[in-house]
Amino acid sequence: MQTLTTRVFNNGNSQAVRIPAEFRLQTNRVRISRSEQGDLILHPLHPQRGTALMEALRAIHEADADFIAALEEAHATPAPLQDREAL
Image (cartoon, rainbow, N blue to C red; front, top):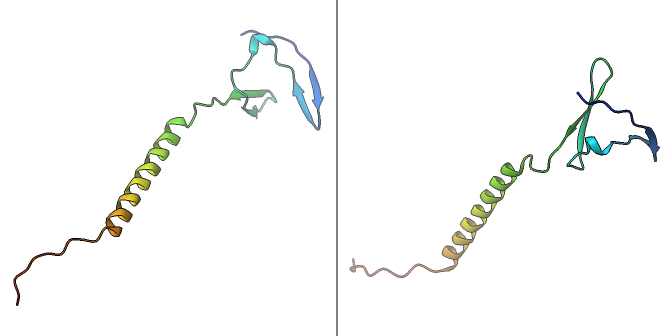
């Protein structure tokens, strides 16, 4: 395991840690946790997480929108009169 020493500094009201280039993260969001021993652990949150779910939800929404539009169109178009024998 590679280990480097870096510095801690204040950024506004928050404490920040300088991440050396060797440990650069390819994301702008992380989940942080603290182990029982007090170690801080950063978990990168990749933008792809949840993408498949969001695409599926969008597809369902689009299908619902198309279905509703078809129902509205069918309702707006009167049914043709049927030819029937007189009683």
